[in-house]
Length: 210
Ligand SMILES: O=P(O)(O)OC[C@H]1O[C@H](OP(=O)(O)OP(=O)(O)O)[C@H](O)[C@@H]1O
Ligand SMILES: O=c1cc[nH]c(=O)[nH]1
Ligand SMILES: [Mg+2]
Image (cartoon, rainbow, N blue to C red; front, top):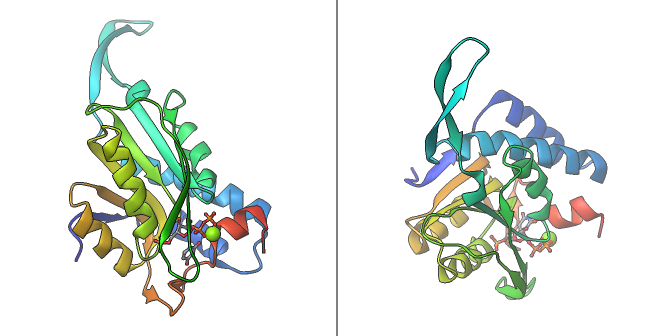
C-alpha cells in the first residue's frame, strides 16, 4: 500500500506497544517501553546501513569481521516526544551523533512551529534517522526532514512508533526518498488530527504535562 513504509510487526513490539497505548500506563513504564521498542525498531531500520571489513584475530585464527561506522550515524529527535527514542538508538550505536529539532504542532492550525534547531555537521554519507513517536498529519516530520536535507543529509530514515495513513501519504508525497519505519499503522486521524486508536499525546504521556 505504501512504497516507503516498513511496519515492524514483531510480537515483542506489538506486546509492548499495547501496554503503551493503555491509558492506565504511567510515565515511568511509558518511557521504558518507548526506549525498548525504539531499540527493536533500530534493528530493522539499520538493516541497509553499510558495513566495512576488519581483520580480527579470534583465539584460534585470523578472520575478516564486519563493522558498522556508527560515527557516521546521526539521530535527530523532534522535541519533545522524539527525545524518548534517543536512548534506544544510542544503546545499539553508542557513537552516533545527536542533533535536535524543536517543533510543536499548533493545536488550532495543526501547522508546525519550529522553536529550536541544533544539528551536528552532516553530509551525503551520513546515515540520518529522524525520530518522532507520532506520525499524524505528517507536517512536523516533513518540516524536520526539510531541515536535515537543507543541512546536507541525503540518506534519511524516519522512525516512529505509530503512523496514521494520512501522515505516511504526506511524507511519501513530499519526501519520496525517505524510508519510514513504524511499529504500527493505525486507522485514521480524528477531527483534532489525533491518531485513532493511537495512544494520546506522546509528549504529555512521557513528561506528565497533562
Ligand atoms: O504529524 P503531525 O500532525 O505533525 O503530529 C505529530 C506531532 O505532534 C506531536 O508533537 P507535539 O506538537 O504534541 O509536541 P510535543 O512533542 O512537544 O508534545 C508529535 O510528537 C509529533 O511531533
Ligand atoms: O495522536 C497524536 C497526534 C499528534 N501528536 C501526538 O502526540 N499524538
Ligand atoms: Mg505533544
